[in-house]
Every structure is written in C-alpha cells, then in structure tokens.
Length: 165
Length: 171
Image (cartoon, rainbow over all chains, first blue to last red; front, side, top):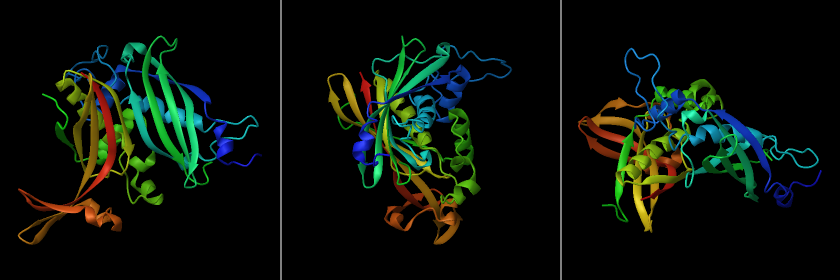
C-alpha cells in the first residue's frame, strides 16, 4: 500500500459519495423546531387539545434542520470511501471530530412536508495533514429526487485524529 | 434601524436532560454521550453533554427571528464548535451586525455557556449546582469563573465560548 502521507490523501479530493436518502415528515419538522425552542408558525404547529392530526402541510423546515438530513448519514458514508485498491480513506470513524458547519440557503427552495424525501450527495473538497491530524472539508448538496429543487448546500469541516486515517 | 454594531442578546435555558432528550428524539441523534450518564462517564466525559447542534439550533432560531425583524431572509448560517454544554447551563447568544454589503447583513453570532456553580447569601452557601458537585470546570477554566448579584444571592458561574458563528441576511 502507498504510504499514507498528504500526497496519498490528495487523490480523494473531488470524490463524490451518496446519495443519502432522508424522509421528511411535517410532524418531525415541527418537533425539531420545538426542540430548539422555536415556535414560529412558519416552522411549528401547536397541537390543539382533542385534535387528532394537526395540519403540518403549511410549515417549512427550520434553517437548522439541515443538520439532521446531512451530517449523520453522510458522515457514515464517508467511512466507506475507498481508493482504487479498495483501501478505506477513514480507518476509524470514531476518530472523526466535527469542527464546523455552514448551511447555505441562497437560491435554495424551502423544504416542505410535500417534498417527502431529501437526497444528499457529498463531495470531498479538501484534505490536508496538520499537527498529525487529517483535516477534511466536505460539501453536501441536498435536493429532491429529480434535482429540480435544491434545499441546502452544507459545508462541513472536521478532523480525523491519529489512528483514524 | 439596523446598522453596523447593532447587537442583541438572547438567553436560553437552563439546558436540562429533558431538553437534550427532546433534541435527540427530534434530530435522530441518539449518541449515548448525550443521553446516558454512565456511558458518557465511561468515555471520559464525566456525565452527559448536550448536542452541539442544540446550542447552534438556539442560535439559528434567534438569527432567523432577527432576520424577520429586519424584514429580511436568513440565507446562510454556520459555526465553529468550541466548547461543551452541560445540563444546567444557560446559553447566551450574542448577535452583532458586523457589516452591511449592498443588501446583505453580515452577522457574527457568539454563543457562550453560563454554567452555575453556587449561590451564596449573607456569606453562606445556600445552593450548589451539579457543575460544582461533578467538577465540570477544569483547571484551565478557573479564570472564566465570575460572580453576579441576583435576587436570590451571589451567583458564581463559569462563562465559556461554545460556538463561534456567523450568518448572512438578505434585506
């Protein structure tokens, strides 16, 4: 196997992985908004007493909700990224530390319960070694199935500690 | 009127184990370091910590409210995660307009955790908090300990950076 120095890792820049599929439900959008203390009616539906099924159809996903449909699934898929010889980029995903994230909604469509599913693809944008850690920058793009709507572009930065790469 | 330097402070909390469980359920992130004290202690955390995205979620809530107050739209938000949040902590979110470029407000969002340690009145300790009992303030953080007068007495707490965030609002 090639020595896993910074040059070795550069081959993964541009690598695309996914898509990761995530189901959207109005009830879950509302519950998420409530969990972060936001009861803005744009994002949240108050369940009235005696009401069997509240109408969630008019709400949209909270700007923070993208964390649920991008980070967990795609980071797990990152652990399956391999080089041409079948060697995994990530040796131990438990060594991954998520350090920053950015959600870009400029030019994006609001995510509603009617969209039902979000498909997110990941791309490795940058990889470098500093202080014995492998620093990773990923771009996730979340769309509907036929890619006629884009819901969010997410940039995640993290690092793999020694033993993770 | 919004201008460079406009600042708002929003306070959430205290974060509780219930708050954290609700976030775990709503987000689908059931990592036991957030919900299982025994597990969290076994991996060296000395008790559960809140999801980083919970405090960031509070910030996103306030950023969006600020955007709506400006009749604008929040088009970008992000943060670097710098510290942990424990049960009992309050989250202080400072939103500051750093620049206005054409129709975009550039926002800085700093989030600190305020961790109560003890309450004293008339020289007597009348309440201690979990953070003090569990020793959640490290040696390195001793200079972050402060006091303030409250209606119940003198509160000693530690205030530390949790998230260094930002946002963009189109107005």
